[in-house]
Image 1 (spheres, one colour):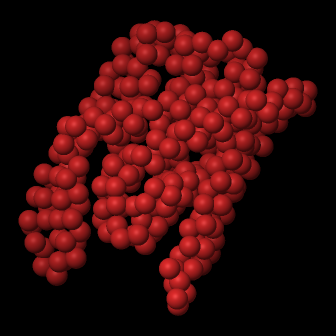
Image 2 (tube, one colour):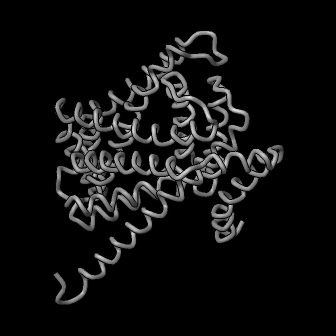
Image 3 (tube, rainbow, N blue to C red):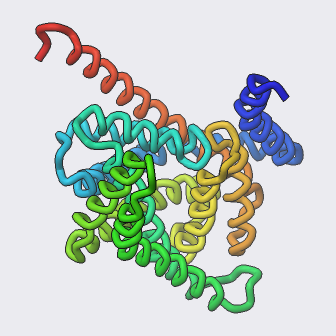
Length: 326
């Protein structure tokens, strides 16, 4: 196959995946269900979601500030965080978010090795935070699995793997950098810089702080989406439904790491959410419809504010390059 044709098909694949999944899932949903779900959305629900979203963005910015040793001004880091937020589902496996983050941080004096290492660290802390946030649901498990012990064991294994990564990666990268392969001095330099970064950010005090911030980030995000979930289903909020609902959001988030996903995550996000909702036993008549509405609104907000932040960053960059600008 011609390379240009292959690239075209790869770019077209996310759109085809989204259209296929959405068409299949929506074929049996009555129009009345669409109407009632849309009418359930109120200004107060959207306002509460935006409030939690902004608070979560503040915590996410704080975490990046710690991971980058407070070397980027607060306003610039806020803009970079907003761009990173909206670009999570832009390309598979969060490659767009990584690209934007390292590009803009490098423009502000952060080596790309440090930017990549900081971004990877944020994902590892997210894994730890999600494991903590999902753990209470094991106590109220009502899904198809008879015993919650396998779920608890999986969460412990997940958290243990993330913790081991944070503790062992400096040693492992340092070991690789000592191999000195012939004609690979750039690779050796990259590994050394990455090893130094993780060593600098390995203090128990900082890691405890980052874990606490990461937990608050996830709590704000899950609460913001839970607000829509409660409003769409007209149910009474409670700890039981919230913690079980978190499994569905976590499953949808995992879909962003797939090598192939729907366009902007549409289709694959909803499918993962719907499967997880049914799995944990949360009674939802149209889980795919609920997931689609939640995803559509949250993406509209994050893309709007994220693109605005991107334009501001780009404008500031062009202005800084003009002669006589300050």
